[in-house]
Image 1: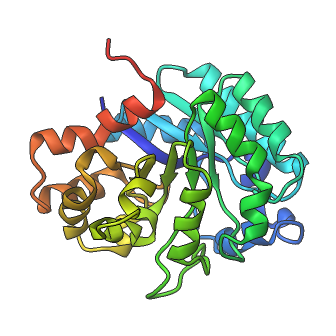
Image 2: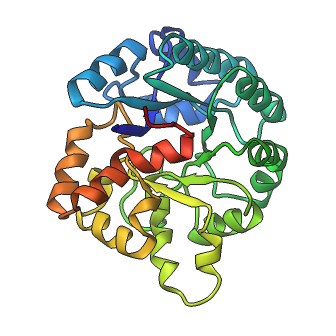
Length: 282
């Protein structure tokens, strides 16, 4: 089974009048002001999955600040999962700073979503305020043994929409703050996996962390698959396309270029995700 662990869907309510939300949601404006920044819906994703040979996708909304926005968006994710339970697994999304976040997470998990994420605050790093504000949500996810996807990015290099000022030390502090949670660090965790080479402490901190490949072709050489696999173990890498940003075959080409074996490819392209989502092989 090939599983895409990182996709974004938007209902027509947001995609057909995106400009109307810019004044209320600065993060949404920062990522989607450009007309070239695609907003895709459920049917587009399902068609793309069919074309690209993807059996299941994990779908996210957006970390809206306003509760009315993230509730509406999460309702769309719930509806999508209920319509296509064999193809889609949904995660609950909201601003990590929202006081309504814990209530929304509980509502969505009770209704059948499989985790929380992709959580992000695009105008700051992982501040102490953010870490503290997620305490209840992280406790809920730990109790229910569901994963949390956290937006991360590399702290150096070129800038682009959605790149935050997060530091690796903050990502590391987050993992240490919540050691009982299954945490997926999006976009290769900003390169944090390199420090798995350290002799002390870091290996323990990364025990419950996974790293997804979202946007990798825009960020890294294909060599990253081999290097990350050797440092972390290939069982810690999750294929995620960041749909509709890039098509899956772009990633698969780079995995082939990196020389991954059939066993390594199976792990990265689906087996790891299936285990994390509790999907039993038929």
